Length: 318
Figure 1 (cartoon, one colour):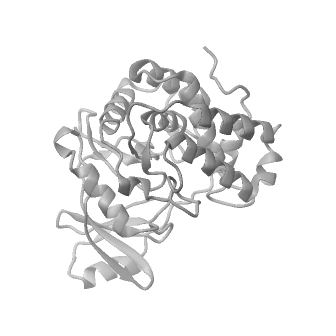
Figure 2 (cartoon, rainbow, N blue to C red; figure 1 turned 60 degrees about the vertical axis):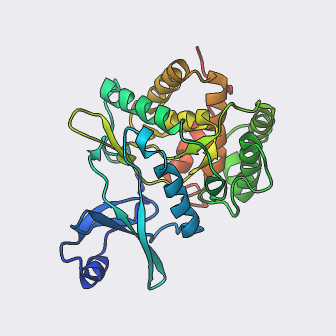
């Protein structure tokens, strides 16, 4: 499995030591950058991958979420300081408690039956984030791979998402069409269905990348922190968050497809989302992100998107 995670570097460790953080050491790494524990209750993230389009906007988004800390059963990131070092953005943040719920499915495959500990944690996180209002700063964020804020020129989330799908397919649509039968029809039906969605009762924060390493838990399995906002963070329909989470929770394990079906049904029942809307949002996500890691279709994420889009009808089987 090809990985797109950034790598730790002794150069960055030396940089943080030189800045007075003598206990600096590697902590974690993701698509956007590598994180270092500084030893004083803070961490530093070197954005060596995807740079935030507007660090000041990201900071405001974090502040907007933190305003609801009293009602959240877990902590969220807080940017304490920002610097530029040799052309790379570095954010200093408070360290969040807990340990990753488990490794990403690209690293270690989950078991056939998803433990109740995982599904309970997911429901806790989804319910809590769905209660955090979407803000103007969240609407100003650009999702990875795109060239403008998601909400630019739009007043409704489904319309903004439909426009994103159109832009994304124009990037390397011929490549995707070679793997997805009748792609043009899939795109047309997806866009038409998105635009036809009614206005939801509430626009909330959308994390957009709730994979296992981004949810930290304590020894009992209760969520203690949600981190790494930014990959697809925006203001949007809480059903979109649930749909994407069900799809990406296990992308590469041997039981990935049945896990997606199981979680989609669970979230539809427990969170009162339409199964049709969840399936629609999953396809929109695949159309919007299929080429984020390569332009030649050589990566696992592209193949995952193609498989999801090739599964047939827009509604999951009952």
